[in-house]
Image (cartoon, rainbow over all chains, first blue to last red):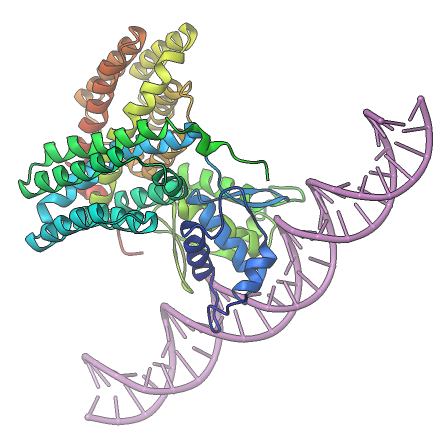
Length: 223
Length: 223
DNA sequence: TACGATGTGATTGAATCCAATTGCAAGAGA
DNA sequence: TCTCTTGCAATTGGATTCAATCACATCGTA
């Protein structure tokens, strides 16, 4: 199947956006090779803007480039993934701190709804989407320039493993996640930034420790 | 003057490295335009690898690209600079935590020497170099993949403003910096990671608060 | 004189073409 | 049969060439 996504122009940015979406959606998994010619054909462009797009994605940690050899969708070791989570533990509470004072009552109500909506669903993709929506909404009024994008990159870089990980959630693990989400909303409601930081820190940290109990997620085949 | 820096090959990475060094050394300052043709000629290459190099530096926050318009050395507002410092406050203590258990006695001795050496110098460039050497040595045995590079990018992105800022240091400000460095070394010596984190957090935080007292550093002319 | 439209030069963006490097496979030799 | 060498095909990297966009200056008009 060959979809002509973009009519005429196929700037490096558009290609980067498209490739990013493909990777985040799981259409191409970690370790899979990305051939310049292929994506060039897919986007109706030449290889030059594709190379620029690959540089962009490399900087985001989504793609790994090896000189004169090729590009692969980045593969994380368990240690690297834990590292990214530890960075998130430190940065996301800060981002939430910036956002809380500016969050409107409507947005807090929406956070409530999202936290409840997640409890009913069972689909993995729906869970991932709602979880992302929830946290992002909680960050959405942070008046920052670089911190938000940094956090976004951290989420993107670990997206694939979060998906795989979520499939292994037990009922209890799910319940804990939901409880923590409600605690976060409560702290936001009270405008208690310190408590919100604490809860969010623990939320991410607990997820990391849970993740470390599934090292098999990182036993990649060598393809 | 036309210097053929690289004999034959002028890969995108080499150009990126060279440009990065030029920016960090202050040879080109924030707000200055970077013309593709210029750097291409400077490195004896065509504009294609230059564009890739600019993408790399853009991702590092050193260069700002505007479509169909051009590239400029990134300029920070006071708010952005403070944001970067706040990120550093959260991440560098973590990085130090990873490094401390692995630091050898020789390296700790070298940290002592660097902390003392900084007290004697008066040159701004020497101070910057020693300060960087000091902190980097303290991080050098952290067994991390992404955290170290993240911190490095944060340092690079703020390098120019640190240079300008250092020139405004009072004698007292210098003394405080040196005292904090000695405290850091002491904590490392005791292998007290919690104390080291605390001291380093305060060290960066205090610098940020000091920085905020010099908003004129960010009053850029519009060129 | 101030303001807006238009055209031109300069610069960036992308396509095509050519060179260089890599990985693999086939074959020779021990 | 195993290993090392050698050559070819596939793929990436870079130079050149062509197209598109933007900024600025010039001119015209109110």
